[in-house]
Length: 386
Image (tube, rainbow, N blue to C red):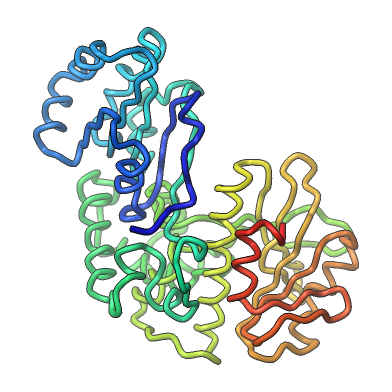
């Protein structure tokens, strides 16, 4: 079994919500970290139905536990009413809880008790390079980083089943959308826009729905953890900047599978987008696991589209840019590849400049550190880059 980086050490003092997309390994992680904890698995029909009929059953059973004991509720969003009982047990019995799920949407929409700050929020992401012995960039780009997908030679059927399960369980069961065919089409169009600036109007035209509906669809992807926004860096120094966010599916394999454009071939635009996506995915997990909310990530692009930097790492309190990262899939970096970083450096001279590529060895070009992706990632996770 692969050892995950997320250890949930905060549970020694606080209760936690643990969110993560389906099949990221939440249940496996919790069983490995806390084998003696009281576990309620709401994927089991009998347990779910019992609590739906009588949420108070949780309180009655847990009142028999000693103060400070740990209780895990898996797929907590399936019975939102349990959170009132959890609240009471935290306050009156001193129990600690890990409340695990793949979507907070149902909890929020149902008006469920989110415990008023009594539980911290943590997220389990797909696998990251540091968790995989002999990590292979090409395999990650084609298979994705969900454990069940990365570890097999051909994950195409599993990915297809994954997307089908998502539509069935998250969309149909919760009756989130009325027209499933339109939403399925949207998933494909959103894949075409993956790693691009979101333009609701253009996507709406392609999907034959309103721009308002498209915006709601993106919200669904975000709230069910199938995708995320990368915000634009908006602090203007000299040049006017784009303000709209970019969108990424949560795992690098999802958009390419939706568009049936695998295996990816080096040297193509599609390959380049996938390399950028993988790096953003790794950076997102690294910042969350290592710094929590102390650092943020955004991208930088001038309004005229002439200059762009794929990722900026900033101190959350000061909004000071600490590192600017550009990702290229070329095996030979030229001066044109560095123009975005050079333009950014004119306005932010103190930022560390990094360009990631498929070159064989790292080198320095003026102020810009040029790293092979496969060598950058281990140094990132060893905390030698940020």
